[in-house]
Image (cartoon, rainbow, N blue to C red; front, side, top):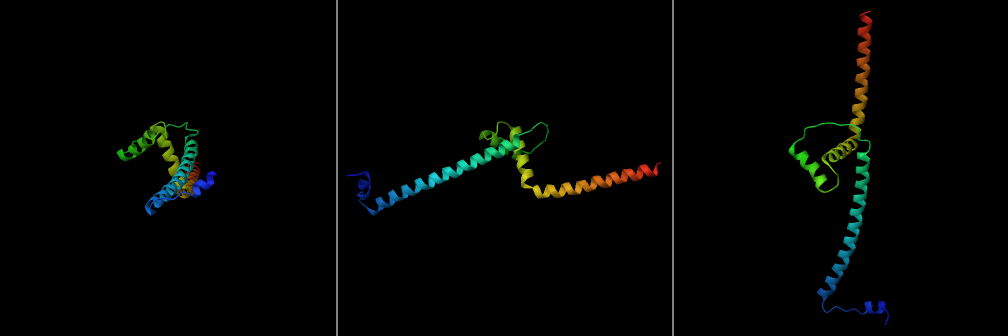
Length: 129
């Protein structure tokens, strides 16, 4: 008898046994799909983290509250980042990306302010001559 034939001849004693077997098979499919999705998310997170940590040549000292510190420590405890510094760099980078439209508007306005300041300096310089 072939292997396929043996599988086809399986008979369960009760409908509950058949249902339990079907549930196990479905759970394996769901678990496999879930593991694949989680793995894709981990890979994506790794790439994002790598981008966030490139070129970190500037040092910034900040004071943060207990809640923010707990979030930094979660990333370190989960071995997602190696330090609080890496955690902070990652979260700052993600915050900037998440608010890109806001920073685009801020940049346009600050450029206008710089232009007006330069005009003011020129006016004051001309009036003093």
